[in-house]
Length: 202
Image (cartoon, rainbow, N blue to C red; front, side, top):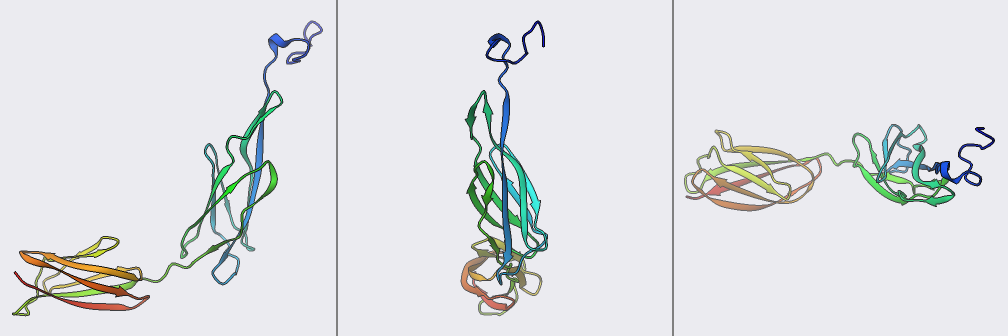
């Protein structure tokens, strides 16, 4: 107390009154399971807001909590929640990452719906043999490109290429080394090997 006046007392001494910032926080909780409904332990969880980021790791029950994420402030009795949009990303090896969004409110009642992680499919393999039309001789130095995705490989001395790609439907285009380009449709299945033969003409 200075001279009978309490500092920061806004009623009796408004000149020295300093606004007090009180942070408003939220606790965010959730659970992570795999595609069979079993809990996923050890998954990395990131809660991203405009101005803050919180991190957690799932426990053996697949559950996680990020505590005291700042979502706003109270200044001189006026509350402002200016950072409530949360993006929750979950990652773990061997599974596809997943993102969820949530609008946070003050306190502990911020539960993200259970996040299910799908397995990353084992890739299939695409092999191709590039030969010259008419002679059947292998052509080295030809580029084979798969779309979508843009995976490319260049043929070796025996006219062969090999690419590991995720299952899906692709168009494979062989071009270069003075030959006309040729495109074939390719369907890659999980853990399967697909072999195509190109016959390029000049």
